[in-house]
Length: 275
Image (cartoon, rainbow, N blue to C red; front, side, top):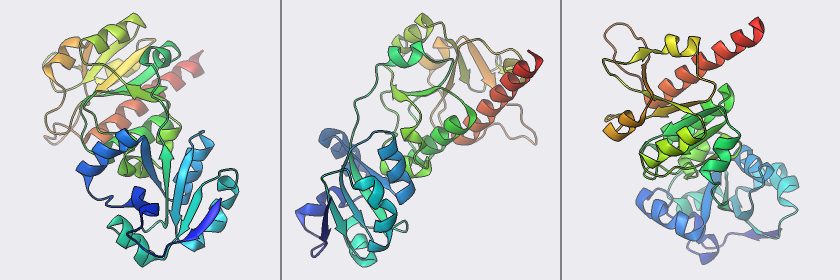
C-alpha cells in the first residue's frame, strides 16, 4: 500500500472516482476501462474475499484501520480524504466513507454456470440498478445458484447495484445470457424448465409451481413497467403469477423475486424434511 493524502480533488490520481452520479458516463466508461466501484468497508472486504483485485482506494482516514488488513497485500495507492474532498471528487456525500476501484473479473461462460446449477434467476432488461442489487441479495439469502442477465439488463457491478446487494453480487455466480430464443435453447440444453413471472390468462399460481418444482428451474423476471418481452414469454415452459389481494396486480420486481425464491425454498425444505 502507498498512503497518499488528497491535496487536489481534480487530480488525475483520483479520476476513477470522479462524477459517479453521471449514470451515462459510468455505464459507458466502466466496462471499457475494466473497472467497477465498490462502496463501504463491508462491501470492499467482500469483494477482496471473493478474489477481486483492487486498483486503488479512496476513503476517510477513520476507515483505514478497518480495511488495512485486507488491503495490506496489494501494491496500490490508498487515497485519504476528508468528507468535503470526497464529495468534491464524487459529486455526492459519501456516507459510508470508503470507495475502491476494482478490476472487473472476466464473465463466466453461461454453460459453465448452468452445468452445476439447479435454480437460477434470469433478469431480462431490468434497468434499475437498485432492483438488480436487491435481487442479488435475495438470491444469496434464499438459495438460488446463479443469476443470468440479458444483454440490456443493468450492470450488476454498477456502484448502486453493488451497494444495495451488500456485496452479495460478489458471492453469487452471474453472467450474461445471449438474446432469446438462443438463451432458451441454452437453458433447455441443460435441462432447465423456464418459468416466466407474468400476468397471463394461462398462468399457474406460484403455490402450484412451489408444490412440485422441476428438478432444474430457471425463474425469469422482467423489466419494471413493461414486464417480460413477448419473446421471453414465448420461450417459457410455464407462466407463473403471484396470487394477490385487494386488486393489486403486481409487485416491484425485486419484491416479486424475493417472494418467489422464498416460496420455492420453503417447498424444498419441506421435501427434505419428508425425505
